[in-house]
Image (cartoon, rainbow, N blue to C red; front, side, top):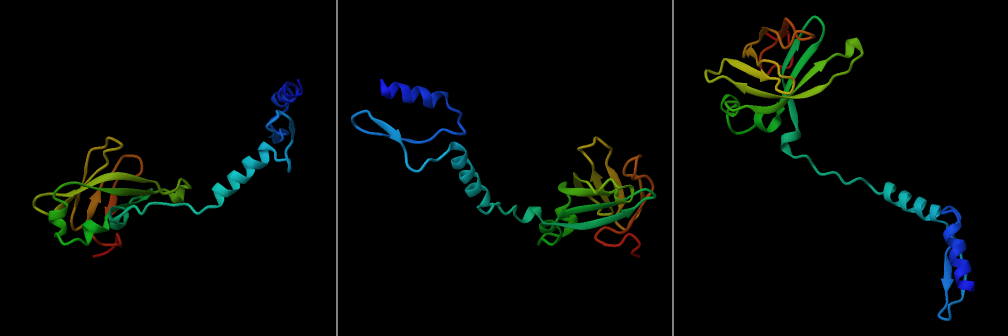
Length: 176
């Protein structure tokens, strides 16, 4: 009878105040020593888990990007990044970009207090090696064709219209 009363009381008690008990072979139960609440155990587990260093996987060489194109429009600045492994690889850049490569397009809206979002784009060079093609496939925009030596282009109609682009592989849009 004593066993059932203690089990019933434990089942009814709040999880915040539930204590551990010691069960003897003869069926006697007595309070455990020391008293440990579920909250304390949970808190200690969380502290141990969250204080361990985070283990992050190295993203690899494809994640290291370099800016290859800088453009400046009336409302915003635009930049195009490609993987460093493509830009500095053993294969000449025109041949490496003969097939589209996933890079990033940065639209700098910091002046309007809207930040600098990055979006994936497909970057390639035409077969004659005179034009860079930026395909903003995530937004469904038509590909933007930029002369390799730079020029004025339209990325989109909201912020990237009439953008002055420097030469491909130059860091400064005013480079000549």
